[in-house]
Length: 174
Image 1 (tube, rainbow, N blue to C red):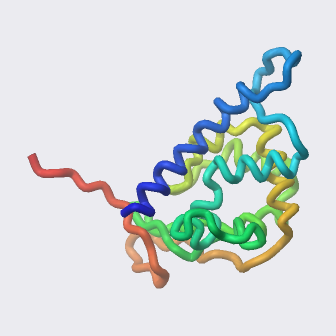
Image 2 (cartoon, rainbow, N blue to C red):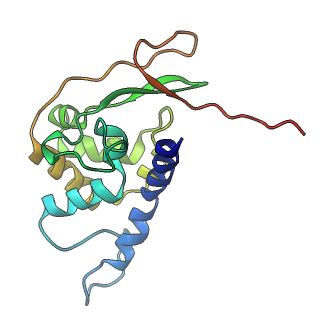
């Protein structure tokens, strides 16, 4: 349960990315229509977003269990640990393979428009500034292609063959 609590807390970190961007504009820059992070190289900013956005929590196998003590070379290769709920069972994709198959513009469009199954917090990710989506892409690409594709979504009426977290609401009796 501790890992699940940490996961829920870290998923909410994605929501602070936009707010942080507003505070990170360089001095002298007028208010832009879209907050974004600045400073450092694109790859450094993308790495920072991946960390504070909690990307590793799901997309890096064992990251939560080892409290982040996973070599960066192993980051963002997905996890075969499923997330099962009324929608079925979903898996955190191998982002390093995903970005290899998308142009930067396609990645930005995906992050800004995709709506799919839990537990991915798409409603938060959809708010990511375009400039931040681009540096995240550049960071993930800098890691290189590695790992294997993760399992496909398992429909709700089928039992997954992998380990999984069960995410079902429980309504207490009154």
